[in-house]
Amino acid sequence: MLCPCGSSLSFNACCQLYITQQVLAKTPELLMRSRFSAYATKNGQYIFETYGTAQRLKQSINEIQSWADECSWIALTIHHSDETTVEFSAYYIVDNTLCELREKSNFTMEQNQWRYIDGQIIVHNEIRKVNRNDLCPCNNYPTAWSVKKGKKFKHCCAK
Ligand SMILES: [Zn+2]
Ligand SMILES: [Zn+2]
Image (cartoon, rainbow, N blue to C red):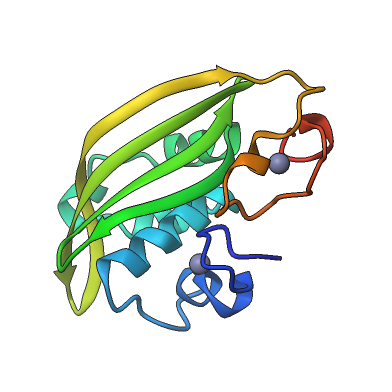
């Protein structure tokens, strides 16, 4: 399986190493990518644990998990990253609607590990409705991880 983060590496050679805590994410971008991959693979626990300590207190793991479960996570595009921020777009389908979330996220180092603090939402849009017989939207994203070329949505990223 390709890594959901769009690196074009296999999942077990990329974000799975962070999600299973075999390797620490060395940069905010690597942590951000692994958090997206955790959403895509429905790993609410990892998403929860990679919030900063103060932010974790405000989070509900059940809410994170149900949000991850409800969505088909199509693709991630990284627009910019630096020492403490990452600007990205995450594309996902929920309720048969293709959506974009573009966010500039802030990260901090705690006990030698990068943690997500919060983000400024730049775009949070519904792009369009998707019918089950449409060409799967993942075909339009070069970084999509689950592409089955030419497949209808119902045979590809639909649940
Ligand atoms: Zn990855
Ligand atoms: Zn698809």
